[in-house]
Amino acid sequence: MSDTRTLTEPKERGAASRWLKMLWVDKPAFCAALFLLIVVLCALFGPMLMGDMATRQNLRGRNAPPFDLAQGWAYVLGADALGRPLLARIAVAAQNTIMVAAGAVLGSAVIGCALGLVAGYSRKRAAQWIMRLGDVIMSFPSLLLAVIVLYMLEPSVANIVLVLAITRIPVYLRTTRAEVLEIRERMFVSAARVMGASDRRIVFRHILPVVLPTLVTIATLDFAFVMLAESSLSFLGIGIQAPEITWGLMVSQGRQYLTTAWWLSFWPGLAIILTTLSLNLLSNWLRIALDPAQRWRLEMGGRRNG
Amino acid sequence: MQSFIGKRALASAVSLVGLVILVFFLSRLTGDPTNLYLPLDATTEMREQFRELHGFNDPLVVQFGRYVGDLVRGDFGDSIRQARPAMEVVLQAFGWTLRLAVITMTLVAIAAVVIGSLAAFRVGGIFDRIATFFSLIGASAPDFWIAIVAIVVFAVNLHWLPTSGTGTALHWVLPVAVLFIRPFGLILQVVRGSMISVLSSAYVKTARAKGVRARPIIFVHALRNAMLPVITVIGDQAAAILNGAVVIETIFGFPGIGKLMIDSILLRDFSVVLAAIMVSALAIFVMNLLIDLAYAALDPRIRY
Image (spheres, rainbow over the protein chains, first blue to last red):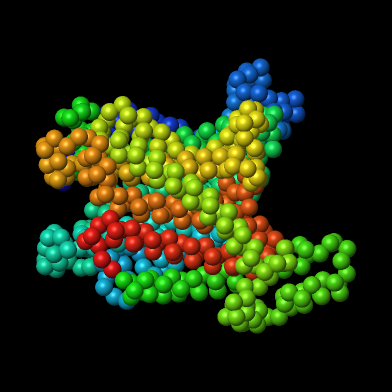
């Protein structure tokens, strides 16, 4: 058994470095991945390292303009109406922003994919019902659903995740089902069935791995969409409530100082736009990298027409 | 054809009924509007009278029965806030949103199709790279942020355009421009992708081999076949605006259906919320139908 391990381990490392090389070839995607790494690090460690700084009020530094280092490096992006440094606040707000988006995307992807596998693979009545359910959710104006639910329950991180997850389920449901319907008829699935594999084994071992790359690409794109939706909700005042902060809420809080202190809204907005842009770029790269028929474009080392 | 429309209408009607029931009960769960409308020093009798007048004292099921009964007679109830028939209020707001959606989506469709096709003709060229870069930024931008930055730059600092409202043609520039950005970015990507795959098909290569010039190839030969997925996305985006571009309408003080919906929910003006849902659901049904007809017109193989 020890032989197999020594054989597989270098191959594993080889895979990781191959992926890194493919990422390095696509420079915009590489920058995007780097930026997202910083954002994730902020989300993980920001509140721990800068939590104090982001909540301590400093009335002498009220609406301090950006690029002024007199009060310390934290004030490089300026300060808000209570003199709290914006850089620290953006780093801390990253946690809620990312957590809501990640929770919603993960939830809707897992549920949508599971329902889609059932709807695509089984020919029973249940499949019909699942699709009708998807249609109903699709026809519901999602923002309206969010407003009503958040207005009824109180707006908290968990409720926002719930609402956003529900509205995004149909995307994964439809994609998974469409793919499964096509894969189900392929030769390797028939072969597995003839060899006596159980339904569960066919779905999880043979069909799911083929569907997964598409879902990962969509999820990356959807992450950007959900982030924008959460920001819009927070901006309208029905999302995350102060003293919790997200980037969308920060934009909305800065709105009343727009004419005198533009930086209050500008920097959090820029953080949103850069993160969603990075996600879009990364999703474009994933679409190519995960597609065996197109992967050569990246493996050729970026030489065009190669 | 007729049976197709009938089937679609039936499916939509079923989900609309579900939607109305859901929203009716959910919205009533948010609480009693009485205290929102009467002054703080109103007496208990006044509050009681208000509830009696609007029928909030009856059990929910009785209220629902009465609402359905009125609905059958074509009465959508009255707006508490404006003391006018709810449908009148909603249709007025819908008119504004419809105009906004039509103007924006026409501009988006023309710009995205022309620029996307030209970008696809020479993949990796300088024009393609610029177009892709800007469409990616457009698709990633939070529209509320663009809106307030645009207000600061064009309305507050430069004084070129009004900040909000709907008086003159100038009032339309900012809302349309801001609403333009995201759909433009998304649709441009779809046009480009779909165009690339059509341009590599055999019949386009034949046309090129015959010596047809670039522009006729793109806009006569390829465009028609590349339009199918594009139309789907255009429909989705138009539906999003018709459903109420809530954020943009709020920021620019635009009296459309999105702003109406959110105001009505916050002020618990239930009849207006329900009427607004029915109107926008109908609008989206009609639009999906038009899109299906467009499919059939573009591709003779598609029949209903």
